[in-house]
Length: 357
Ligand SMILES: [Ca+2]
Ligand SMILES: [Ca+2]
Ligand SMILES: [Ca+2]
Ligand SMILES: [Ca+2]
Image (cartoon, rainbow, N blue to C red; front, side, top):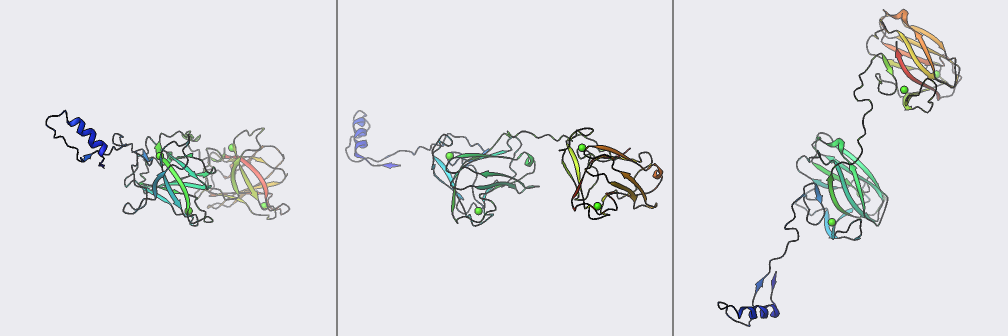
């Protein structure tokens, strides 16, 4: 910064009168004051993508040769939620569903100790904000809903699952998926950073469970065979009696179709040598029959009919296939209300603990 001012030069002149070596002069002097860089002593913290002040550690924009996608502007709303002087300004084209803001780390970004992304946003617009990490072995997306407008709100994204995936880019989709807005919608952004993850760790209750292939399904940790879409796992809203477990199966039978069924295809001979009694819990609201059938192998098919004797409570049924101990079957087929078409198109039977004993 160059200053030419008479007052400064006069002060210097007075001072120089005491300095023998200095020539006294009242003509204008030129002095140079080095600009003070407020960020000169700030160490780069690479966990911060940008605070739009001293920590602007990554280029924001898809192409570093072009202009940034988030120019530095004055903070539009200095409050406790964001007291800083400067913020970024990103303009979303809200007629385009998937235009986005890109931060290219150019190498794998290390999330090991900091897998939570935080970003402050101030906008007049609500909508979905998707943060996506990509460029590694697997892209990971997380999303938040922007609901508050005209105030700074800090959003957090849990990228714990993305640790070790080697992703090299962070992409933010503002007003994601929507195209009913204006071509220029402003989002002020600030303090984009990765921090130590504070999201609770959700542990897998089935971790360490060994598969027991004699259990077809308990709809919890032992779900060992593929089911058709007509049998789904749901929360046990019928807890009580002999079934206090958390999850059960809901089978939807077409009660107008006499022979629709639940097929479990082993793809190989079912080992019936020692465990050949099929047991299962059924919760039904109708006294009907169900038919269990073994088929698909080199032996003749074998069928056993069973009466559903109890309604409105969990009941265990045993289908004794011990006669088939040495036979070869690859499929188990269950028909509920077998042979009848007197029901509705969506009759429900609730099942659990389907297994061989
Ligand atoms: Ca700032
Ligand atoms: Ca958009
Ligand atoms: Ca269960
Ligand atoms: Ca049916």
